[in-house]
Amino acid sequence: MEQQKKNFKIVSDKKTRVILPNMFTLVGVCIGLSSIKFAFDEKFTLSVIAIIVAAIIDGLDGRIARLIQGTTKIGKELDSLTDVISFGVAPAFIMYFWKLNELGRIGWFICLIYVVCVALRLARFNVNSGQEPSWRDNFFEGIPSPAGGVLVLMPLIYSLSDIQILNINYDFVVPILFVAVSILLISKVPTYALKKISVPRRMTIFLLLSVVLYFGLLLIYTFNAIAISGLLYFIIIPASFIHYNNLSKKFKEQDISNEEHEDIL
Image 1: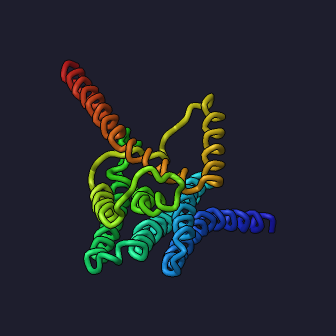
Image 2: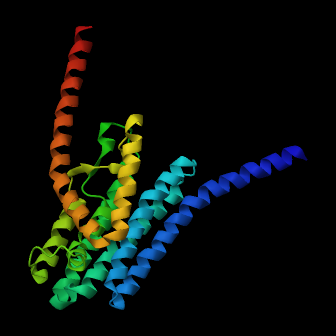
Image 3: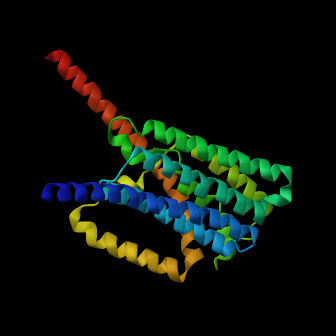
């Protein structure tokens, strides 16, 4: 009897470990779809906030799954499907209702191109994620879909912020930005995989303080903080490209040195 009770607890715990991160993922789907409804009702402020919340959830569900050892193949595929909706379809609809609809069929075609690029980006990620671990795991090929989803919203976010330094022609900037982000999504330009960055223990307290400070600014100056974050991300892309190339040269030299050493032996 005692053994049966113990086995029951083990099965129950395993189900919880699997269900919990997937529940987070499904909540992200609902929030992403809700952002489309907000945009349809011309509540663009709520639309942007919904996408940001979906991005935060996307960053948490995988970590929770790994933390409680609840990673599954279903969870992986569900996460990709959620990303297509929350960071592909939803941002495309938001920007179409806000500005791209003024371009008629061209605006809709641009939206389609962007969503297709998000889907291709996620398909490539799922295929490559099964490879053996290496230093390249610290980088993505192209920008990740959550970053792409936020970046295409940047003109709208800028218009909602208090940072009105530039007089932007949105009719020109929005389609150009959509095409640029679409190219970055399917490109092989290396970008930092922030999920995999490790922090020394002595720096943990500073990291926690920085996170608390950032979320404090996000709550008080929501769109200002997001606009600045998007600009900083654009600046980081060339830096990650240079860093990747330097590491690539370093490890190639090490491989050549090891091969020469083996030949001597």
